[in-house]
Length: 157
Image: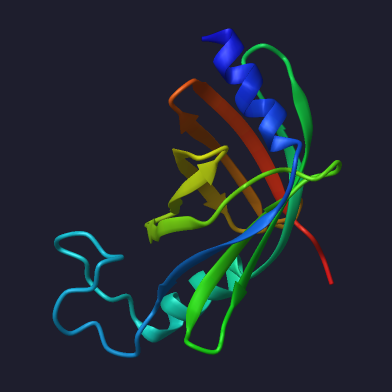
C-alpha cells in the first residue's frame, strides 16, 4: 500500500490538467446529474454567496500519511457554458486528469479526480472568511492506493 501511494504521489509530481465540472443551470426543474436526490435550489443570495466563496484561486499544501508533502494550487473558474472548471497544479507540476461529478452539499465540495489514471474521491469542507482568517478548504482525496490530505486558502486579489 505504501508503494502504491508513493507511485500515486510521484505521478502527482508530473503534470497538470483542467478538471471540468457540470453547469449550474438557471432552473433546477427536473433532475440534474450534479445534484443528489432531494436537492433544493438555494435562494438567489445563498447561491451567489456559494459561487463567490468557491470561484477563484486557492493555494496550500497536500500530504500523505507517510509524510510526503508539497504545495498545491486549485483554480475554480466559470466557463461560457455556466459550468465550473477545477484545475489542480503544483510545483513541480502535478499530473491530474479531468475531474467529474463536481458538486456541493452545505459546506462540503466534492468531486472525482483522475490521478495517474485512477479515480480518486475528493471531499473538502469549505469555510468562509472570518474577521481573523481568509476562506479555507480542508479535505481528503481517497485513492485506491491510499489517501492524501490537503488544506487550501483562497488567494486574495
